[in-house]
Image (cartoon, rainbow, N blue to C red):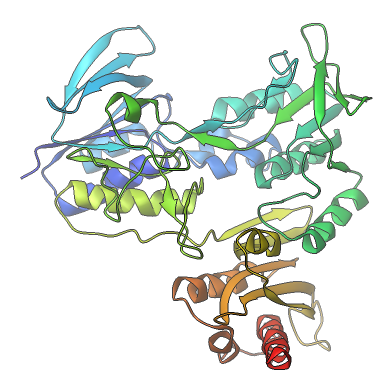
Length: 452
């Protein structure tokens, strides 16, 4: 019988663990220790706080602190951080960030859900006033306030979050320059040809995109005034650095917990670490990439809540398994929905796979029907076993559902022929008789036949 579960981290993974632990055991004592002063909120909504699509940041908070204690008997200890612990005695030392006091907390089961922190490159001047990263509500509010006094903004990094911030600041009327070190935007999400579709839309809307370029220095006397990009000065009143995240594993290391090859906490399918009665979940954890079998850092909310669920269930005495991720992702930028799952062509080639690719430009409805929108679909297949290994979709609507289908295909290890046999729904106001996803699959099948 578990008496007390302590969860370190009050984000998506930590709160998911708490909620599912409570479903399993109605009596166990549950304590959530969180560095921030807010209960769990949607970090994915932060760019929309900047753009004022979400005018009040508190709207991101789904439930007040009182809801957890009143309805679920979960104690939230906000504004606190675990500074040390003894896994043999099952004791944590917790510091109150408001008054500096240190208290001890006993546990029977521990869940580490400490998340990640921004990975900031060592750019000279990166510590100047007016340079930001985006991770918390406070960050979003500060960026929004700075934007009200700014004309020019530079975004360093063209991943999903960086481009969401670029769109948010663009909507506020700022002149935007995006600088990406790699040769294309969204380098971990799209192939170069699909990335170009998004970049063209951004440039059409007046955003300057510099790829294959390095920010060499951030200029300004205390306050940022510009950046140097390969010898050229670009004006900037505001700089947002969005160059990825790194797992927060300091506590795990203090407790003697093993880290994996990626630097994230190593767990098994039950989200157990090798330290007895200690689980881990979320961005701080290394997880299995089901497409290749290798360990990766997912850093995705969808992965965090699922891992948190499994950790919470098992910590409370239940049984659950998390098998891994296929990296199903979607966002909306400058009027385009962009989704991907699995490997890009370059990622496949880096692993010694020469994928067969089917790419189509189709319509979301029959050609004759009003308001039919253009949609781009790509399917990638391993020619060795004809297994689907990735997909990318770009359009103004109907994107996520197509990638969700391929997500299931990847998780079930299905072939392109399996995908081709999928019976899709058809009605003129909703979808065409031949879904572009199936047309792309057919293109691959025909290429495979020629290869044979």
